[in-house]
Image 1 (cartoon, rainbow, N blue to C red):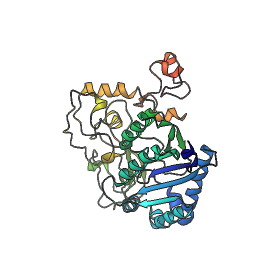
Image 2 (image 1 turned 90 degrees about the horizontal axis):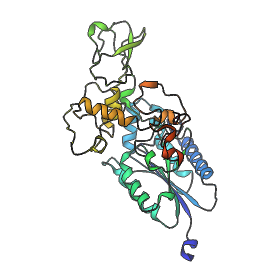
Image 3 (image 1 turned 135 degrees about the vertical axis):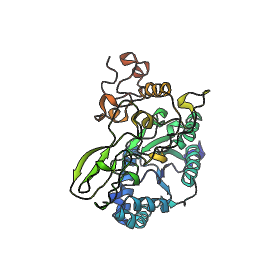
Length: 362
């Protein structure tokens, strides 16, 4: 006890900078933006853990080259130009703040985060580990191991994207949200509007005949929402036109993935490695495309799809769970009500995943 009391109490914040990307508004401000981001993060952690008797260290690991390339592809030139200065500003904001470029090796960031997460959670002088990597299911195994070993009380999740990856909410760990600190959604270059194409030689996206395209108008396309699975070959519908050249918004990948993976009959759908993507198979498209952590290439039967639909309804709609309106309404593939209603045992214990008002109404 004398040894423990003599140690410096500390709070460690670990951030996966490849997924929890700081607000590009602040990144574009360079050094001043880095200092602002550091101050906002510090203030939020101090408010969450009000005691002054600890040292706060923040370690951000990222692949800087990869982020620069993503910013270039997304057309975020201001942020790309000032990223280096942003990092300098962040590092200079406090003695124990460190943003480190670990290079482009496969899962280089993940390896660093997992090692420090495990070491710091078990360290006697560490009272809390604030974990900013909730976009990546790859961390779940490490977190579950720490929970099983009795370190759950030390871990706080730091939410980056508006929606955390599937599995993090089931950990039932406390979550810290810092408004406007991170980008709310993943940067997806393929989702951006492409440059205007000359009206003389308009490009035709998959699913549209060339006759559909008018050379003097721009057409934006989207996949209609539906409760039934939608083929990627479903014709895309024009929803808006302008008087400039032909432009297309890339909603899904240009061509459907080659579906060659078979379901392991000895495992349930949720236990496949990796499991099939609910959003992809139940709505016809996934905004994460090839980078999605779930699979898009399984050969599924109608029975598989129906099982997926039933299972998805057992998980709460993240948007509705936050108290916001779900734009998909009744066609949403996730649950808007707990299947057990007012008789839910976990609800009475305060442990049900369905937490929004009205989700347990009969």
